[in-house]
Image (cartoon, rainbow, N blue to C red):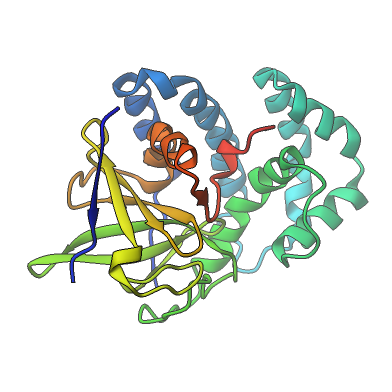
Length: 267
């Protein structure tokens, strides 16, 4: 992979349907065989999340405890995936409704960190459809300038570029509820660095829809999905397909500001 680097030139919601996400993952698993395995995992998870989303449909203010009914389905999914870390984390939690309620509520309210990346992923699988359902009914001011999601308070997972006038407009995409909000082009979401000389951008020819937006000050980066380069991209899915960009960025000493849950090493 050949990486090129250039300096940057001087609520809305992006909530695709689960069917759209699954279809995109299927296509990308063929286009990018090196990431087929993780995309296959994503498709299996997305099918469960689609079922959860369907179960919440028609309920304006569902209680978070409504997710407990899908714990048995989560057990089936993990058994089919064959992931030892996920199985171990799931066995530790078991089917204890009280423990699951605590985990879901803590994650939703951003309380103490989960005990392991695997526990975080298990909780995330159940909670994400709920978060998307709840926040889809909120009125979000698109001009919000905070690096934190204005809907649920979580950190952004990705940046997104889309055509605007003669250039492109940048927004951030929430790691949990998928709310999208506008954000300045030349500004690090992590440390607020504004010097464009310290905010290099890296890309690779084989991944035209993605790039790494790094910060030399805090040594972090956020991946950006450029919809002006590929209008069919679905950020959360294309993020997984372009995993080699993350590996390259980390080899250069940059840490991802908010890792994609599916990219956590022990999940």
